[in-house]
Image (cartoon, rainbow, N blue to C red; front, side):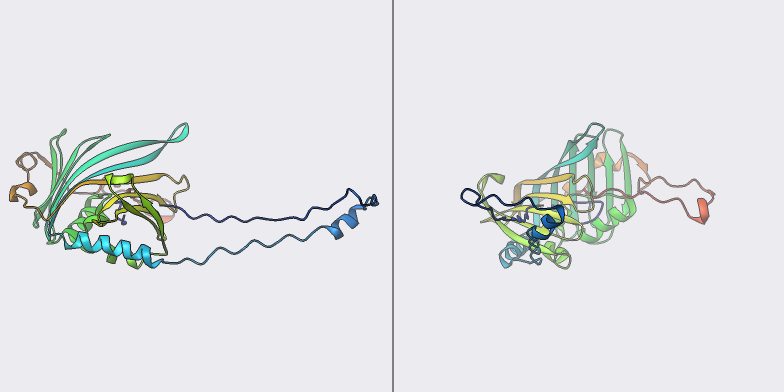
Length: 300
């Protein structure tokens, strides 16, 4: 899962340190004189130093799995899939609550994308046809429309920069998933295989960047990602974000009218802008000459 505020991956590394102490036999030994407190300090066994943590490594098997998945996705001229996103939010009682969204994703390279999202909150629709992008809220009948750059990658960045629109599956649909991730990798290793996730055999790997710890389940045969589970390393609550990917269809024919909507086009138009609170026109700078800080949307 890549950064944006978007967008969307976990987890295993444990080190055990065992301290072994020697026990003294006292059955046949004559009673020893009671040591003074100072003598007790002198005869105390020295503590063994903890073993240093292993240096971070990029296991070749894990990297090969990531590269194979990236190659399979980037080679597809078109794709459809379902993205089920579960993410935790803190509750007033302490333990987190889980919210879920479901997105039906359709794309055609290099310049077409549609995302229809429902879930535990308002439904939304996003359309991009290579020239324009629209963010539509059906319940409110509101649409934001903006000119768009000529590629999916550039449109995703523009949508995030200008309106804080981010999709947790962004890392799956960019032109080169591994290329976008490679420079940030600090650790990657192979965990094993699963027969449970995605209804097929998957290879489990974990990888780490400065920002996120991701565990991924990737099809052993078809190389398609089936689950990504992420914890952001700077999050003190260690909240979990999970992305399940299913119903994969690659290189199928897609009708041209899929990447637009008559309902969205006729809805009431609003500004294509970030939802961050903005200071009113003419507002004075904050204390000590500083401008009020702008909010940042959280990446999920």
